[in-house]
Image (cartoon, rainbow, N blue to C red):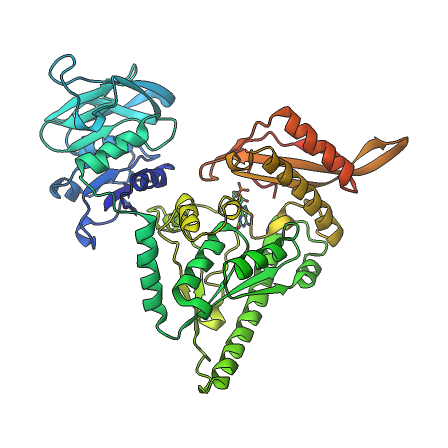
Length: 533
Ligand code: XMP
């Protein structure tokens, strides 16, 4: 295991991902973690970047114990500065923040063409790197030497003269640092000598055993599925582990995509054999959403109604299980045995809640099922909590979940309700479902689906004038959104080939009754968000 100590950089989780891309297990912990309390011995430590300056009064500090563990250390950006600061190097404030690309010149050791330090071995003479910092080193600590420079940073990369300690000013974890992944690979594989043993095959085996142990021979688990990647993969994994003692529930909340409930039923139940109940609660949801326009209010109503419906269904499942056991000669012992609630929590959610600053401010309240079913006293089971989204997809592929599902774009819990900007009615849902399905169908036909991170249509509550035949029309507007993003914290709008947009627009205005105008959203996040509500 590689231990990554998080000093609050927005990129910390990416370091974890890059390590795992080398099949090396890495765990992110807050920098306040006391090293003597660790329950494992890391083979190497990476110190992350940070929005702080080492001069700030409240700057996060590294446990000096890291320098006594005798394992390789890599300090990234603030991690480098914090390391140098601890080892009596000098850190100074730059006149202005450096943010963007830089060219790193890799230093040769012992004269021209001799060799380079292990961290940059085999990476050539220079590479494009990404910088984002306010302070930088102005003197290196004793016993260190320079291994890389840029135009503005004479100490852009340093190494200890005899110990495997490194510091780099740039961010190898972001994809803008073109060979950054290889730098991390050098560190974890060659310098820390970690085995490439973190594989999905291993993960599946271990996780299935763990689930079986937790649930015992009779325990039952319920879980909600949405048709999204996470819940589908989690459900299939549970099915592999405990078969029909896992009950999946899909709630049709009336604001799903076109034919979604039916498709999820076919795929999960018929193709993957998962024990699934689909509950059509659309009337209840739509009735509660009537005349509601405020997005947070919509989220709350959907979240709470979901819990009500889910609880009711779970109670029925428990009663049915009890009946079945009695029928089979048992004493109805299943009662009380639905002890567990499956949750598709992913690692980024876990990281969010372990940050040393505490969970960051929620900009939108993303609805979450867990923790809310208090009265049922269900315990949570979270088989994906160590995984990133890409890893969940890889797991899904190994579990033989079809490609189109594994690669599916994320879909928010509150569904189309946050893509209908005005009041949510059946008619509005129908219009949006139709426009959205045309949009996605054309994206798939053009072969662009997998290169877009998320695409969807939004129904605006405004009317515009149009002309059809000889008639003036006065109808609603659809806006199309498509973004590329690595983690949805930031996102860029996607540049479509014009002919694809032309086809989509023409089909939507021709085929969807009630729409006479289509626009394309060219806003990035920040300052916009991915969803419109
Ligand atoms: P924003 O709009 O916050 O979206 O930039 C980032 C990602 O989160 C999804 N999203 C949600 N997911 N419940 C969810 O389950 C929600 O309330 C919610 N709001 C946004 C959004 O689709 C995008 O992938």
